Length: 442
Ligand SMILES: *[C@@H]1O[C@H](CO)[C@@H](O)[C@H](O)[C@H]1NC(C)=O
Ligand SMILES: *[C@@H]1O[C@H](CO)[C@@H](O)[C@H](O)[C@H]1NC(C)=O
Ligand SMILES: *[C@@H]1O[C@H](CO)[C@@H](O)[C@H](O)[C@H]1NC(C)=O
Ligand SMILES: *[C@@H]1O[C@H](CO)[C@@H](O)[C@H](O)[C@H]1NC(C)=O
Ligand SMILES: *[C@@H]1O[C@H](CO)[C@@H](O)[C@H](O)[C@H]1NC(C)=O
Ligand SMILES: *[C@@H]1O[C@H](CO)[C@@H](O)[C@H](O)[C@H]1NC(C)=O
Ligand SMILES: *[C@@H]1O[C@H](CO)[C@@H](O)[C@H](O)[C@H]1NC(C)=O
Ligand SMILES: *[C@@H]1O[C@H](CO)[C@@H](O)[C@H](O)[C@H]1NC(C)=O
Ligand SMILES: *[C@@H]1O[C@H](CO)[C@@H](O)[C@H](O)[C@H]1NC(C)=O
Ligand SMILES: *[C@@H]1O[C@H](CO)[C@@H](O)[C@H](O)[C@H]1NC(C)=O
Ligand SMILES: *[C@@H]1O[C@H](CO)[C@@H](O)[C@H](O)[C@H]1NC(C)=O
Image (cartoon, rainbow, N blue to C red; front, side, top):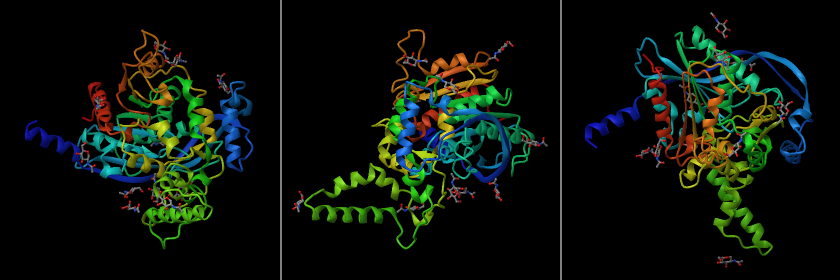
């Protein structure tokens, strides 16, 4: 490679972004189900829920549906708006980024390894503006009754954000965007799809990452997650435990736990090595108790209701989201320590109620990691059908009127695309798809 080409690449990688954090009040108005589920008290209630939800002898969502209502109200959506430094294009395109389950808006701008995995850096370097949101109920957006935080209310919030970007009322941004593109991951992809189906014409182009319309592996995913109450799993972030700042880091707590356990165990004749105990802590729920404890960035405990759930530990996370050999274990630990919960209402609506087709007339790209366990059972290319190139290629049926449809299978990658070594190559595929379909900033 010539030194000029190398410099050009470095230039792209370091093109500066300018970002603003905003809290956007939105009026949510969505028709959605009324679910009747008793309030959870313990982790055993969460296990019972997973058993009912995955039981082939009944449709548990149907069992608990007691009717429908119009869910309405004013809620806050926490968002981050970014654009290229010194941008002076007359018609910039904005990408609205919607994260999946277990993440928040930081999925698109991971600070890990000095932002080396940042989607926003790549999109901004390609000339786009971005708005990444914490979905309704998640992160710094309003938390609400976990049975009311469902796909339809979240999509209503996404639609409000989109309208504000188009009509120039999005806080801190006076521009009226003529082109608004929606990029989702996983449940965020489903919501971006639902946006095009429920609010026709609201999107100029959709990119659905970590997605297919084959729900075969939903039960397997729930089983892997081994859902527990979020507030018990990470009490410092999701419970009501405040953090003492006199001891300043997780490494200290980890070491202390190891020595306490070691001496207690050895008193009864059990001799476990420091490395065995470290595995016990890092790969089980014990690790989650101490995760997130960092006095520099001490989290504000969210004190979430018990219907906010999360998978149990690092190993459940890896099973669902990562492809061994192709990710940095440090990035996985980072993902586990910064994970976000899932609500009961979300679990009931992630596989149900989506229209089979969308009237969307713009371009649509589905980009899924070939080893995605949730949407491809671990191998997107295994369709058993010579007429279907990949499982995500089946999404074409949902977009009969799209100006262009493409299903791209990104190699050596699990469900959590952005946490894999080769993530930026996937980001590049997305920017190229958008620009080759006339959606670049101009
Ligand atoms: C926006 O919020 C993020 C996360 O809390 C923080 O790291 C960042 O410094 C904030 N940026 C600005 C410009 O305030
Ligand atoms: C299960 O019930 C829900 C709610 O009534 C419904 O939307 C869904 O289609 C049902 N699923 C199946 C597989 O019948
Ligand atoms: C939204 O955030 C503002 C502060 O930015 C706060 O005053 C208001 O109470 C919040 N509204 C809701 C519904 O949480
Ligand atoms: C970021 O990735 C590049 C190559 O992909 C690597 O050369 C560089 O060292 C990484 N930087 C950090 C901070 O990890
Ligand atoms: C939420 O706000 C807190 C406090 O400002 C900040 O530390 C955290 O990074 C924010 N999280 C997200 C997902 O914006
Ligand atoms: C812009 O869109 C928002 C969200 O739908 C709406 O509340 C607001 O009234 C609109 N403003 C104008 C000036 O059209
Ligand atoms: C605590 O967080 C700060 C800011 O992100 C980071 O620089 C530091 O390394 C963290 N400390 C530990 C012990 O994790
Ligand atoms: C525990 O195992 C270590 C390493 O195998 C050994 O050095 C030590 O003597 C053992 N301690 C006891 C109490 O058995
Ligand atoms: C696609 O366009 C045709 C012709 O306008 C229309 O009849 C059909 O309903 C559209 N399909 C969807 C899913 O909107
Ligand atoms: C899902 O994919 C599997 C594996 O390719 C296939 O056997 C099954 O028929 C697909 N199901 C649906 C509903 O498309
Ligand atoms: C990285 O991703 C790109 C884009 O999908 C792909 O062409 C390339 O083969 C991938 N590299 C590896 C080592 O998987």
